[in-house]
Length: 239
Image (cartoon, rainbow, N blue to C red; front, side, top):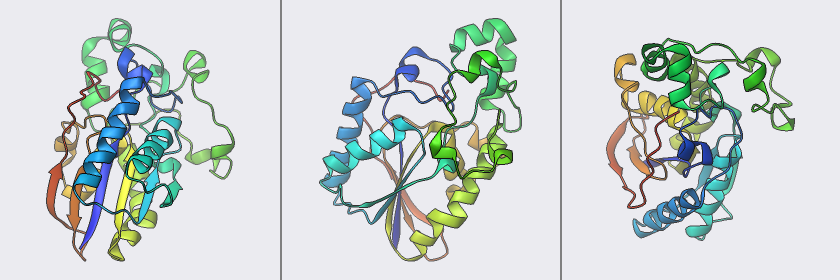
């Protein structure tokens, strides 16, 4: 039996400010750092031993993973950074406060972009572009694969490739795998693992720093699930 542990990064500064973050490289708050320490301690108390780890290419996830591993005294565990686990790309919404976006585009439109499965926000514009730094970490990625906006459906599509090519093979070897990613990329993995419908996945809520532990059998099916809840809560939505 393999183990898959999904953990949303600790609270970021834009989570705190209720801004659409997406591919913007925003750092953790003090509360976010502490959330990841608590998450690591909780996993250690559960007797979890890790074999391999994955994170998105965004700093808030990489930093969160480092804190998690340090808290578990497992900094030596192999770490893979995979851009396909990045947060959903919010296009022109990137950097906007939720309230301001609702004033500009209308509450119903913003709700559909946040909760709908196929709806895309407007593509990246000049104002949002300054927040999205396509630097050396994306050097090997074909330009056609780098989005300018994404629906949740498209996010599921790219995360599915990471699942098939990178994560699932580790689970088939019976390994204990942790994935530190984002609200929407973890929604995508939850959809895959739990075989959720398109409608169901949009309603999935994932708290910062709350490990979700699955027991995974040889058919890559989840046979058990438990969530280690945080006492240090964030008011952040998945934005």
